[in-house]
Length: 302
Image 1 (cartoon, rainbow, N blue to C red):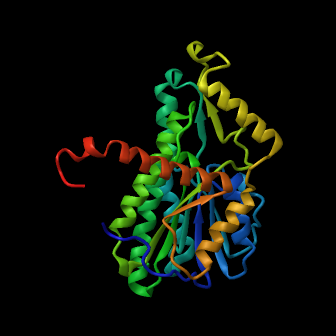
Image 2 (cartoon, rainbow, N blue to C red):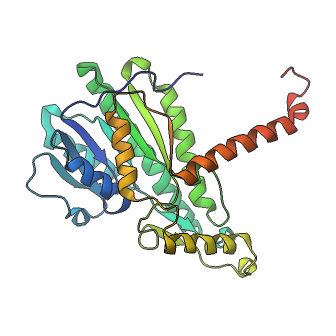
């Protein structure tokens, strides 16, 4: 299997960051952090550019662009605008695919429109920006030997699945598989690195525009149904803030990975809950493998 992220990455002075979904949460925190670094440049994007008013308008290091990741035309326009703004110096060092929202609720009641919109945003939007970013990084690398990092924001939901979020999990699992596969396509000399960021619960606006719900289904309404029990635990966690991560902590971790001058991890669980649940899932999977060892072998040596 082709190895990934084989060389240490050094963040250059004057690096250009492109971040999607900067209107709130992780995207806003990371855009704010990058904007505070005098030797870094920022392309901050959001569906509504007015949501980026927290960033200064008179800083030549910062470019604010409208970008709807569900629209190929919008993605193309954003890359064209960035190229026009930066001119002959157009390149991308760090790309962060952060745009997305959670769709929760009873899976049986999810509509075609809801499910397609969720996967379009989480997966196809990430894929669109990623492939355009690879092209830019490849071309610039040939001339300047720099490479880059593409951070795809997944979630604990990209590692472990819970009741009542089937299509959100589907989108995040797709991002994980897509990212790992594309990372293995890169030639080591390109030094184009990938990092799948997998935070657990983040203190963000998930009860606002970052969260959508399917209509309730009467067959799943009882309090003892798994999804209803989980909703109760989640509400307690949101209310108390226990084990919840600040968006600024995620931003700090991403910046640390980009700037520390070391190899980039393919996966980065963030938060104690994410790390422990990732470890528990891996250990449980090993146990399950041993349990079906003889059946799985199909007469072949294992």
